[in-house]
Length: 43
Image (cartoon, rainbow, N blue to C red):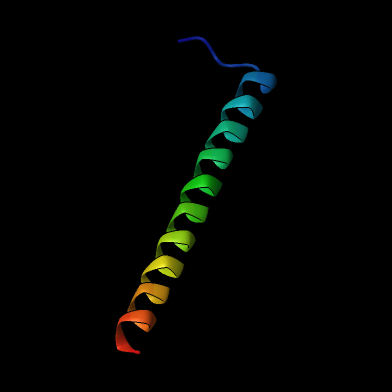
């Protein structure tokens, strides 16, 4: 099996970190939208 070099490992880690950050932002936006929707329904 070939060992990936450091640049390849760093590139994969960076892309994984970007995907994780985007998922986290999407989750926060979803929670915010649900909270606003519930507040407007109760008024």
